[in-house]
Image 1 (tube, rainbow over the protein chains, first blue to last red):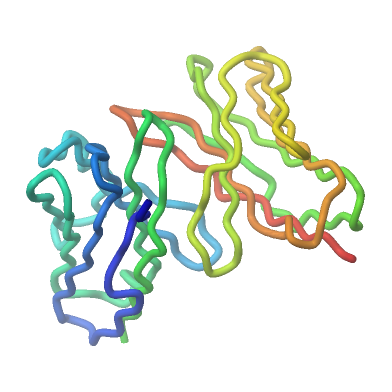
Image 2: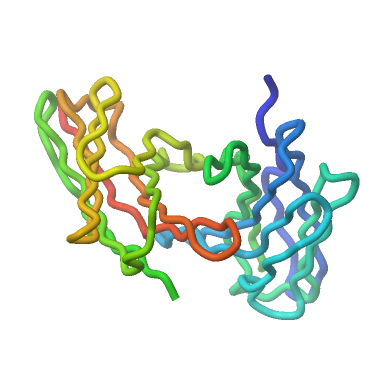
Length: 112
Length: 110
């Protein structure tokens, strides 16, 4: 079946602009995660959704970052007023069974 | 803050050898452990999970867990150049999140 998809695959933006990153999880997966991975670094947890609610937002690095999920499916990660340190690969994963996560291909964000 | 530590490598092994990748974790209460493989420029994929002390084998891969010593390892037998990747160790934390190590890069030379 279809895996996790993300769009866009690449995004180049200017410092100060807002960006939206999209994640389509595997159908039926209620748990969804956002991570980011900087060059040579590990995976940094950002936010976790169970259905449409986000019980754990502890990883969002600043109030410029927000995320929502609608219909228990698609999720959008929004970064406002992007900074150069936001440049990274943003990965989405959906989960089923618990602790078994399937990752999307990621969005490579470059902030100039 | 739960921590997962891995040697960043690279770990270089010749084709056909056994590659041994190690991971230590800080939370003594952790019950499940996962190994993900990440090829360069790609996203991580789950390759092994282990929940009980001892060994778990799946093809050329063996996961070993020692809860008393708080380490989990991944052995790859008959290593192939196609096994060259970064291997991430992950441990559940919080509500239902995973804490990932920074990964060990494995290079298998022909």
